[in-house]
Each structure stands twice: as C-alpha cells, then as structure tokens.
Length: 434
Image (cartoon, rainbow, N blue to C red; front, side, top):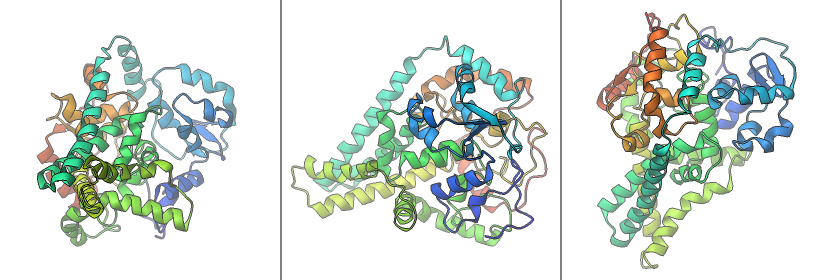
C-alpha cells in the first residue's frame, strides 16, 4: 500500500505505519506503533516519557502489559486499566522527561470531560457494589469449559453429529467467556482462550491494546485483519461497492476458517520473521488428546483429529457470527472517515463506535457468552462482566450530562446493520450527537 492523500485518520495526525505492511499482524502493528507514537523508545503517558524497565516484573497485572507496550503511547490504556488515582501517583518516580513532540492522537481525557467524570463516579460506586457476581462468572466459565471437553469426548466415542455441534458451540462460548479474563491481571482462565487456536497474548495486543483503545479507526488492528475479505471502512479507495457484495458470499467461509487463519498467520510470521509463538499455543491439542483418552483409546486417532478440526470450525463460525455482529458495525456507528463528534473525549468516542445488545441484559450467562454490556466493557475492560450491570445508573447519568446516549438493538438488527455497513462506501457527514 502506498500512502495517498485520502489516507488520514480521524483520531490521529498521521496514518498508521502498520497498514503499509504487506502482512498485517500483531507484530507489524506493534512495530508500526513504535514508529508512530513519539514515545522515544520508552513509555509515553500524556506528554511525559517514562522508563518502566525496572517495573516490568513488578507490575501487579503481570509483566506482559508493560513489556509489550515499550516504545508506545499508552495514555488511553493506562487510564482505562486503572480506576483509582494510586497508579498515577506511583508512576511519578519513573518519569524521565517531557516528550519532545506532541501526541499524535487527537482524542482527549480532560479532568472535567465525559470519561474522567464517569471514571470517578464508577470508582466510588465500586466501593459498595456487590462482588458476588464475579463468582458467578467464574462458575459459568468453568461449566462451559467442562462441557467443551465432555461434548468433545462424546462426539468421538459415539461419532455423534449432535455432540460435535454442541462441542463446537461450547468451545466458542469458552473462548468468548475467556475474553472476560485476559483483559485483567494474569490468571488461569485466560489460558482457556487458546483452545480456539488463537492466543490470549496476541489478543491482548490486537483486542485490548488496539481495538479497545481505537475502535473502528485505522489504528484498530481487528478492523484491518479482516480486509480484504471483509471491509467495514466506508471508503471506495479501499474496496469498491461491487466487491463489498462479494463480502456477503465470502463471509461464511471467512467465519469458518477464522480460527485457523489466526494460527496459520502466526506460524507463518514466526517462521519467516520473528517468533510470536508461546508454549500455550499447544493447549488446543488437549482437545483431541481428551477425546483419545476419554474414549479409552477406542476412538481412532484420525477420528479424534477430524472431530477436533470440525468442532473448531463450528466454534470459529459461531464466534464470528456473535463477535462481528455484537456491537461495532452498523451504518449509524462511527467508522474511520465519518465526521467526528465535536467533543473529542475518548469515552464519547467509545460510545460513538458501539450500539449495545439490549436483548442480553437480563442474563449474565448471555452477556458473558455474547459480548454483552459492550459499552461499559470498553470503558472499563478490567472489570468482571458480572459487576457492569450495577454501573448503568451512573452511565446514564453521565451520558445525559454530556448530551450523549446509549444506543441498543437486538442481534438480528445488528446482523442486518453489519451487512449494510459492508456495502456502505460514503462516509457519514453528520457528526455523532447532532
């Protein structure tokens, strides 16, 4: 890709370098961000440069978050992942100098702005919130995880299509619920995300550090990784309207092989460039192994492998049907190229890029397995999904104060809207909130 005049970002003063890469991956995104962010090889928060080298192994959330963000601007991530003022005071001793150049990102986090106002209120509310729903989230996750292995074993033992489908759905839900955990400090539940051939380390970058911070923008790696099969940016320079109709045809195939593509891309990049594989990339193999052991060795090895690949494909398809129609793609949702809201508050930007699933709120199980409570999760990703319902009154109050609103629809409406967005080629000229 060659940078042209039309390549401008609505949230930054430059076009992200990684989108010029011949192969868009987590590693190319990180490499490009380190070139773009004016962090001077260290860590940037607002207009300060910090050296967290000695803090990497002391970080309460685990060393990964600090190690993998070196050389980048982590302002928004720092604010979203720390709800109290204690971290802000603690990092003062690690500041080495003021940044030489202005931030490239144009989103704001003013003390009296929407996000920081909401964050202060949420911090106070959390002191009195019932924490027992966190335990329920843990039980739901464990129950689905156990079901995945039991259905997988049954599918091999009885060569059952029904058990195979149930195993695929359970695997999909396991992966989705595990997403509730990898945003936080290191824990055992985050490893179960890897059962779907993906890797939580990769997703901590592509999802937590990229998509969550810069949704629906050129800096959103999850937006870029689906191109050209699926392209939601309303720009004819990227994909013609005729080709977008082809997306409707290629979409089911892309869904069914998405998990395999993720693993294949990481293996290819590791062989050709820099290794980005981990020991826990082997965890998916525990599924066919469980089939073999669980059937007492009576099921042929090839049958176990076939059932495993089939259930993974089912899980991949279901994951994409749920995930890509969960919140972010509809003609009414902000995408790169659309007119920006006048108030550039980062929290309001999150609100503008999401329409919530209003049909899930009555069930913690459905919220966990279908990416529910999406706006609150984007604003406060380290909180267990079970705690989010208690924060809605504060969210509504703050939205009213800043003349914004929470938009909702059901899954069918999201699916229709997502397909309309695939066809949209003209940017919205009406700013959100107008």
